[in-house]
Length: 158
View 1 (cartoon, rainbow, N blue to C red):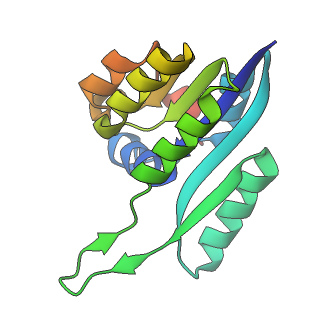
View 2 (cartoon, rainbow, N blue to C red):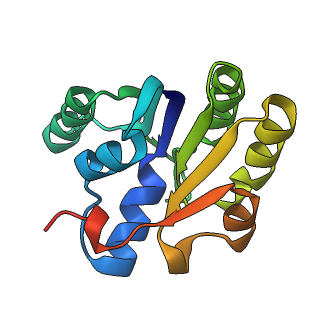
């Protein structure tokens, strides 16, 4: 059985599925698809902490599925913009987990991760898979992945 590590960029997945489909991502369906016939060695969901009951419930659902939820505080800048970027954290964790994994699964459309997947493959010969919304996933990320799985209605809540 191949060993798999899952990494979910929760903010990216939330906004891309909302913008493309007006629906929410089905984390249970994703887990079932990404882990079928595989041994899960790591599973991380990266989110932003807001002291909000709905968010806390959502994070508990992710934990119940099997994810370790990693949280960063929501930062509101003085100019009105917000910050809550997990790119560096995801990158560090992927590189830390790659050696013990046969497959790295990244759920994100962020093109900033293209070099990460290329490096993980070159350094550890780990297979890489990307789940992303087709029209909102960077072409460079799709190209860098060993396998690209389009998020379609089968991976969305009804």
